[in-house]
Image (cartoon, rainbow, N blue to C red; front, side, top):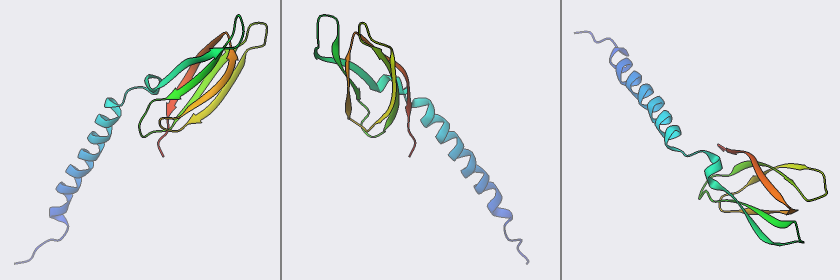
Amino acid sequence: MRQVQGKGRALPAAVLAVGIVLGELCAAAEEPPATEFIVSSTDKQCDEFNRSWVVTNKHTYRSIKVRVRWSAVGAKEMQEEFILSPKDGRAIGCASQLEIVSAEILQF
């Protein structure tokens, strides 16, 4: 009796491919947006109108690329983009307000 090779492998390979795609879609759907892991807080008062700001990544194992916009009273508006490692923070400086413009979880 002659056996045809490779015929029995097509179905398991297709099932595996579909399983991988569905697994990636489910994992992406379960991950909260990056902005939920970024926290801005004030550190200290700089003067009557401005406070020192710190931006922190609360994610436990992913780095996040963050873009912030801030301005001090009487100064021009500033914008900066940087990468925060997991559980890391960055001092921004003195400003009256700080806005998190965008945040993106990095996949590396």
